[in-house]
Structure formats: structure tokens, C-alpha cells
Picture 1 (cartoon, rainbow, N blue to C red):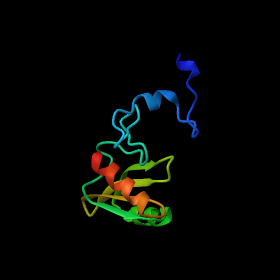
Picture 2 (tube, helix red, strand yellow):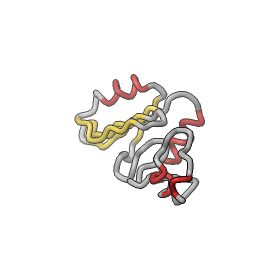
Picture 3 (cartoon, rainbow, N blue to C red):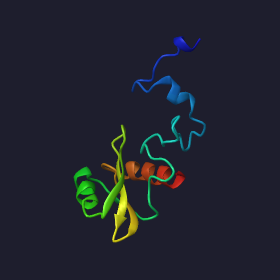
Picture 4 (cartoon, rainbow, N blue to C red):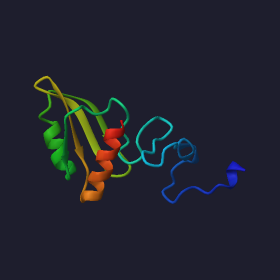
Length: 110
């Protein structure tokens, strides 16, 4: 019975968990990666990574335009736009190498 299944501790809806097909690169029912909340097309081929959200916003303000802004529940923030006509993204990862590792793996899977 689906009702008997308890919610995860972070209150992620059960319907989202049922759509995870690959434990290495989990995606929700909308095709967004589990940690960064990005999907195919959200990131440019050129990606700048920074630890600070403030620094990411500062860099994104230099873009010609911002086409995509994604803020994930897991603490990642992504901006994609163009700089002098070249597509570019900046991702705030928070602190530590484990966060950078997750971001690189998930962004590469998009």
C-alpha cells in the first residue's frame, strides 16, 4: 500500500522518489538532478564554480543576460547566460570538496 510508505526525513514527496532510475545520477520526475536541480540544457559548456552564493551572483551580474537561474534545495545555485556572446554558467557549490564532487558529477550527467 502506497499510503503506508513513510516520507523520507527531508519530506521529499514519494512521487519524486519513485522516478529515480539511476542511483549514481538520481533525477526527479522532471528530469532534474537530485542535488543541483539542473537538467539537460540548463548549463553551458563553460562553467565557473565558486563556493559562495554571493560571489556567484556577483559574477552572474557581469553576464550579458541570465537565461536560467536555479536554486536547489541542497544548497547549489546556478546561473546560465552569455558573456560577450559566449554561453557560460556559474555554480555556487557551498563549502568543501564533497559538494564540488557532487556538482561536477551531476552537471556532467546533464
